[in-house]
Amino acid sequence: MTAAGPTLEVLIPAARIAERIRELGAEITRDYPEGNLHLICILKGGCFFLADLARAIERDVIVDFIGISSYGKGKTSSGEVRVTKDLDASLEGEDVLVVEDIVDSGVSLNYLIHLLELRNPRSIRIAALLDKPERRQRPVHVTYKGFEIPDKFVVGYGLDHAERYRNLRDVCVLVDG
Ligand code: IMP
Ligand code: MG
Image (cartoon, rainbow, N blue to C red):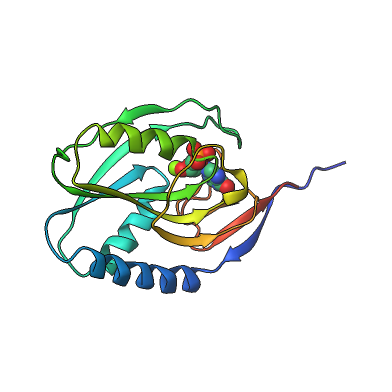
């Protein structure tokens, strides 16, 4: 007997992602007419979304990265959040937009927002490509949301399973074989 491997089913095609990011970029451009805007990418999954979103924003931005880890190699949250790489720049008095791939339980972002608030930014908001609202355990307010998706494990466009599939252009559901 041979076990079939996991299969990928396209949930959100690349063209639809690109179209939605153009809309979000226009909204962000309108909402931040002046001052510094710090885009903070959550590594690693958020970097694909950040790269496209930053180019859809028609104003100057500062790009910075923070690494947090709340997941091991599995598909469920350990509930633990660790900063693995800190920001380069100070956020004091600045407008901050945290860019994340997906909000699932909300544990990581809820923790991170509290952490960043201690650095006294002028404002802090979240842009997330995907939201799985059914899975929420901690409150997280997403101002710029790409898509709400059902409670399925997805990969592609930055999202991984055990570090694989990040470079897929579409967001796909990973179906166990
Ligand atoms: P949260 O703390 O449960 O909201 O977890 C958010 C993080 O879990 C995301 O940044 C992803 O790295 C990961 N994650 C949550 N759901 C998925 C998924 O469906 N596929 C891949 N990674 C996911
Ligand atoms: Mg992530």
